[in-house]
Length: 247
Image (cartoon, rainbow, N blue to C red):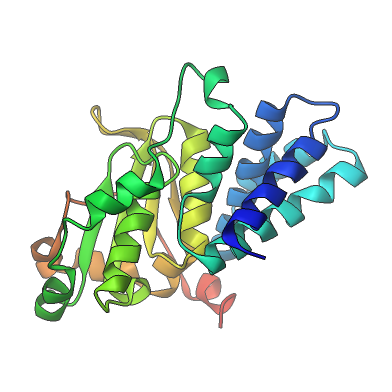
């Protein structure tokens, strides 16, 4: 299957799961449960697990069986090519109209912006890695586009690029976290207000934890490798037990 077919199948499954419940709620529940599943695989959190069980409890068995399939199609779409799968499905299902006119920037525009950074490879060669930040991350389209541009320039973004995203909308945070995790991007996604510097929750991707990026970002020289904007000072905690889940 192609990127487009996986995306279409995801939309179909979302509609199928929304026979009893509003599709806006089904989409929101899906991205929250998927984000919790990924996050708890590296940093088990009892409160998030309780929230997961609360959400899934509202669905019948035949409905709940659809959610792993949805996540599988997001993962397979991103295996086919990098893009903003969740953001595109969100727009195609016209869910933005139900959330005060929220819209996600088309991925083609994000790619055009990312291509302006034509010195990623030279920065990595000089400093070891670069950082990229988006203060209104949405579904992480801009960060994914930057990863794709790094890849085009011969840079392994999974090892040499670190992303920080922030958004006031928790749904967007979940979307960004899922997609950055699935493409193997070392990243921190923050639910909070960028202007007031308030953070309600922090989500660390598996590659952030496995790559020991807490340590790398604390190094005095990391600021020299920044691009776009500085990453948040919020650092995720990791420990040996969490890393062993991936060894």
